[in-house]
Image 1: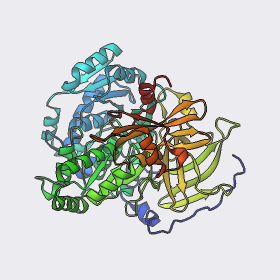
Image 2: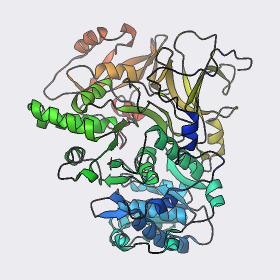
Image 3: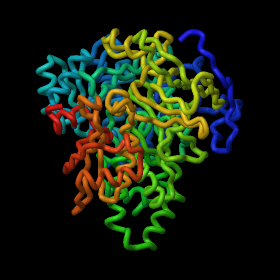
Image 4: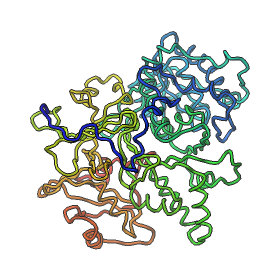
Length: 585
């Protein structure tokens, strides 16, 4: 919108909560922070700084940074032989949560190709879709998945490389003895200008799209989080997240590897195993977990296990809280909205105020609460360094014309806020993002790429957010397509209703959706999983809800189910949920 009037410009946030406003000289001189003028340094090239240090521990053994580098270097030769002379070919790989994943990822990048990670949770037809859509040159997997991937390769007419079953063991024997041993990969210029990875979206609004991330995108995302979340080489992270999403790949895998930290990697989430690691059972002081990242579903399951095992023993509860509070420095929640009851219960159990943040496959992390400052449940903070965000409203006169409500930029820790003078109160609009972390394009989809950017270069997240002017923090309200319910002239956030309902003593889980209605446009329906042996009818739910939320947000319909399906990152596909439970809608 031309001629837009802005209010506060270049506002510096001085509250003690906002220690994110740092000294510019310190930020600029941080050894891990990269400016746009510097060469991109891919994660495998950081390994030479920590050659003899343990990088990863999995169920098979321990691996130094030198082990991983040397093993990946050898594998990169095999990949190059199979791919041929060309660079930037797509290499799909299906590896479990262990050293084979890191070895393969690094080897793909050393050979100058583009990594496309897959998941064993994906059915064969979806794997074939990814293979064909990305026009993959090569598939890589381990013997465990060889039969599945052989069918995929045969149906798609692609080459398949099955890694040696002793790949991980052999890597532990590879110790660099000369300086040249820790040299691999292509030129600096190649990584400065080339694509790194393709991650596929969940496909909730059509076929999954391949999100193309450059090496510069990835390294920007990593180095931004290293500073914001205070990563050091003394950290040890417990990793139990899937490795085909940004959360598991960038936040929990490449960040620690870039910083020279240690990763304790579990094959998958297991509540008993995670509790054992968090509490340091049978672990030496040097192997204790200092950092943990998870989705809300994981925290919910850990809370349930804590209640079952420890809730009757107050001394044990206090002992657990003391360990977590003093030994673990950072706990993060993301990938799905964190219900306030979960936040509060985890605080009671662990003494940790979970750090909430917001990100997407296309942009990495863009908003985050501060490391040192106070954290309020339901809020996702402000832009990370180098990121600009705005809230905007689409104008009816044009599909791609937006009115700016507020724009917030983090320039090396300096928070600048520009607010439209014509807007009163706390602005609500679609969240748009700019910065070097934003993806390059959707693979082979120029029209889809263009559609997701405004004419002035902002990426449209499709998420509605609110900026609280008093707290100076962002709050996510949900996807504009499924989480904003238009009922009787009101725009209602499904996420806010879900937060209230999760506070009901009988409710174990819930999803709130909008169902088509001739009178109201949409009616609000609560899909609820009850706690064991609990019962509840629609009238009881409505009467309770009226005491907690505005009446126009009280669900008009209640659907009791045994479980609500979620993906590996704890997200609900509400469109599929509606089709399944309300096929007539």
